Amino acid sequence: MDAATRVEGVCAEVFGQRGFRKRARSWYRTTSAGEYQVVNLQRSPWGSGSCYLNLGWDVDASSFRSENRCLLRLRAQETGVVEPTRLVRGDGVTEVEVPGTALLDEEVSSTMPEAAFAAEVRRAVVLPVADLLERTPSIVDLVPFLTAKPWFALRDARAELARRGHELPAG
Image (cartoon, rainbow, N blue to C red; front, side, top):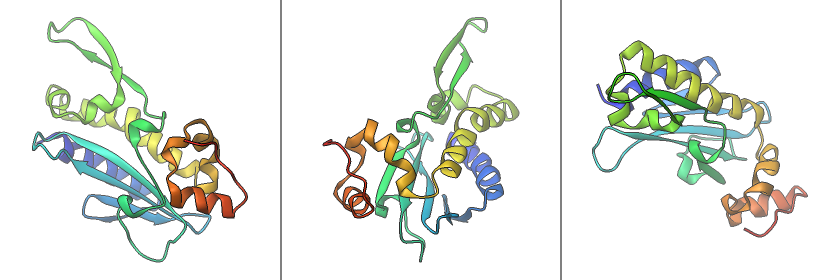
């Protein structure tokens, strides 16, 4: 079983418990603020079995849309919430700390037993992302993040935030 399939099982469990509905490899919901969030598990385009978690926020919650059609979109590793993980090196003894998104890599995931992998990807990646989404039910809740990293806010997101009284620094 490849990394994407293994990660999908963890995502389905965690996001399902948080009120997300599933469509293909995406989980989406209308937030408590009446806005829209989506998480997409994207397989690597290179056929490696590796994957990426893409996140999207939008003000229109009227229908499903993929994260690349949202006002604001980020990869999980860009959010700063993914926890580091410790992996045992090939010698079987030495541990090394790596970013948690390394768990989304087929080479890394294939070296771990199923239960250990599921527990670690849940702890280091999926739960922190789910918690971020809980803390940001509105695009306005992302203003502190976007103020620190304004290059993530593209024109449409900037216009919506400006309409709501939030000016971001140039990015």
